Amino acid sequence: MNFSDFKRLLGADPYSQDPGFLRARNSSGEFTEAAAAADKFEHKLQQALSLDTPAGLQAEILQNVHAVPRWRMTAWPMALAASLFMMVGAAAVFTWQQGQVTDLEAYVLNHYQLDGNRLLEQAREPASMERIQAIMASVNASTDKNLAAQVYFIKNCPTPDGQGAHLVVMTEQGPVTVFYLPATDIQDQKSFEMPGMHALLVDLQHGAAAIIGPSMDSVQSVAQLLDRGVLPAREIHT
Image (cartoon, rainbow, N blue to C red; front, side):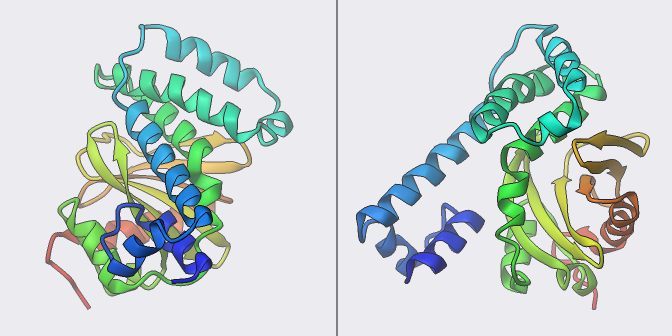
């Protein structure tokens, strides 16, 4: 396995048990270093959603976030975005579980700041149906063929209510990020602005989702695609 193929699989499934992937992890310093960086990132993402955070911290940080001009927000370095997620993301989970919907928005904002752009860059070709169904099955769901045909990236990700899925769905207006939230209850559809992006929280026939894209049209089109195309596990429509 060459380094390019290794990095693509590493980004999509860092815990893959593929024999060639496992051999490549320790084949040279370059491979080992990339694998260690991916392991560290996944650990931070999981840790961010398991920390207890003092009440009030999330609101204070969000106030500072909204005060930052958009042009400066998009230029923040990854280290700052990661630090922000570690603070706000943890607070989002801590207080969202007590019923504050705005904290779900904080989770979406900071999850996207941490790895949204990085994973968009990896969405270069359609994901295989086998991989799509394997990831969706892990969260007790499946997809129809229309949705699967537009999925260019998919992996598991943490959510406020357990394991979910991170997808990149290709549209005519470009790639759209989806955080599939299988166990999250969203009562009312809600849109909100992110730096340079539009976001939508939606309840689906099966589960719920946070959708982030370059325009509200692209986000709404993906919402409709998800509502029709996300199905209970093993219920695959043609």
